[in-house]
Amino acid sequence: MSARRIFWFAALYGLSLLAFTALVYFIRAIAR
Image (cartoon, rainbow, N blue to C red; front, side, top):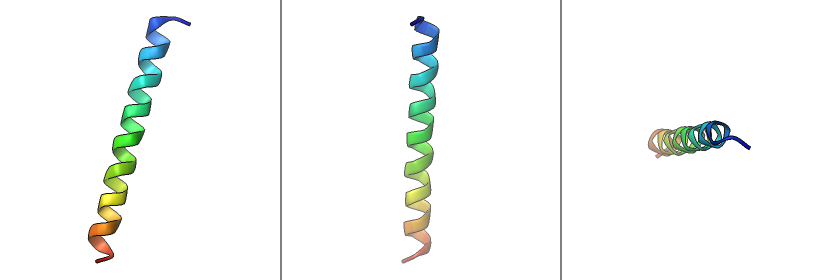
């Protein structure tokens, strides 16, 4: 595996994790 592919997988994983956390925080803020 090339380093660029590993970097892209890590970037996509971090971005999806951040989006998931923001979504959960947004839903919890609405459904108080």
